[in-house]
Amino acid sequence: MRTSRRGLLGLGTAAVAGTAAATLSACDSKGSPRSAPAATVAFHGSRQAGIVTAQQDRLAFAAYDLTVSGSPAENRDALRELLKTWTAAARAMTEGKPVPGDNDIGAAPPADTGEAFGTPPANLTITIGFGPSLFDKRFGLADKRPAALADLPHFARDNLDATRSGGDIAIQACSDDPMVAFHAIRNLARLGRGTVVMRWSQLGFGRAASTSDKQETPRNLFGFKDGTRNIHGDPKQLDNWVWVGKETDQKWMRNGSYLVARRIQMRIEAWDRDFLTDQQNVFGRHKYTGAPLSGGNEFDAPNFHARAADGSAAIPPTSHMALAAHENNGGVRILRRAYNYTDGVIASSGELDAGLFFLCYQRDPRTQFVALQHKLSRSDALNEYIQHVGSGLYACPPGVTSDSGYWGEDLLA
Image (cartoon, rainbow, N blue to C red; front, side, top):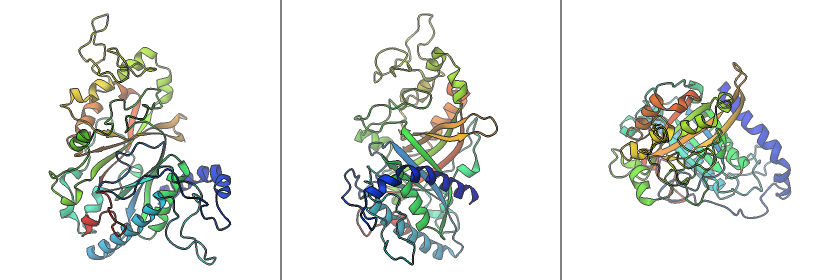
């Protein structure tokens, strides 16, 4: 809990200071929004928003642990009430409305913390996932745990921090406004007080992937275009690799997806001293154009058989792209939804604590992320400059289709 409080306060201080004046000017005397929000993403649907939604520029991610101590039946009731409350709040916030409740009683805390009053939702999406630990004996849900929600194995070179890993429930809030994204996880933490505590959190900026072919490929903190070959809304590819279908052993997960979160620390200072040619060989792409080293333009298919002038492979077989390419992995793909992050300095070395907060969605982590990461962790040339320091796996249920519905309703039915 000490880590959670520190993380929550750190998330809030800079955001509140930077937008307070704009927030006040956009509100009336009671702090209510003056006008209806513009850019919104529909909350209701058979599948959750925030997965294939065109990726927003800002992320606020948080994992929570439940603190219930009753019988399994009592704990399930508490979880159900939490999810109903959270769903109602998320529905309102994504529509640009305050958290449901009264904000005008002087002798009681307001229902909404207020930092986003008057601020449009800026394409806010709030996505929920359930961690493997939710399916232990506390709630009597062991028989509802999907086989695909198997604990992630230890990968070569992992150096995971337990205080930045796991969690019973995860919330991914994405928006084009950092205040709006932060407001979402802050208010869910407040509404859940007494039932949940925040285990860990992460802010992300400058998206490091694109989930729409209408978005330009962004760059990671190493300066390279990241996620050029991501799934860009192709319904067939999404059905094949992202959405859970009838094949699942748990009916409640149909139309859901599995989220893997990995906090990947980058050795930026060491990278910045490396030669351009070496950097390009690590990724398998030209740094400035994003084109594969085999030639062509950014979106041209790489030729892994092409040869350089000296007879060596134009795209080194240990490059990140060569190892992750679907052509070299039996066609396997994942949907990337990554963000850059920076969290000050590493006390032990004085280096920047910065990197990639890697989020990916898939139909079955065992045959997708786990298979790819085993390969990358053993052979990827990029491993010289990165280290996986945080991790989480979550089952993201289908969406909410009505005003009376709530997240995880089929799980708890």
